[in-house]
Image (cartoon, rainbow, N blue to C red):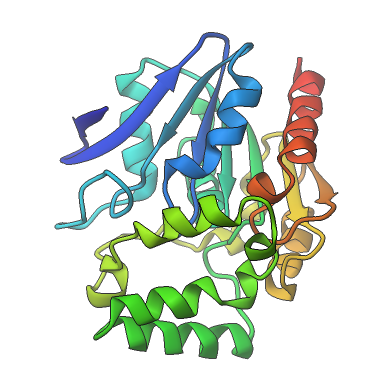
Length: 258
């Protein structure tokens, strides 16, 4: 359903009862990437997923905003006092910002193949992405093709989830490649404030994810209450490539919280 929250329209879905889990998707994707997780956890949890502002069925940005404030508005709308956030890639970065800004609303974090605001990506990553963004300014379909064939997605493109992943990416509007995103970022950057995150945190990383994200996982593993788990037979899209192991590791983590 689409709800008017925090000055915009956000698509969200809430099902089930129990300990609340909120799923946050990655860049150029949307909430559909979590289908296998909703099926796995629906019996014991309230499950919330949504499309970030600028993605999927949610509205495009037209004014300054913070993803963390959008998520807070969703929690308030659903009357959820404490939740566990599960974010992948960009979604992990959003989860970190929420943890730094509204820690009292969280029980725990699951950060899968996550970004960290302020992390220094490699020259290879920056140059490849620059080429994609440059292409996207005039040719969204070319940019999508370059992004789909990025080494980041080499593993998922060879997995049983390839068709599903490609369809979600094909539906991406490409708005961010052609517009200046007015998103506001938490200051100081999250990478400088990790010691402030005292929540139980599960770090998941695909064994075949690229080196930049392997390095980020190592940085995140220094969080005061973090544990890191490598997901075998998976690259960047761990939840889609190896959902059985991904789901089981989260289930084990949640059980230990009780």
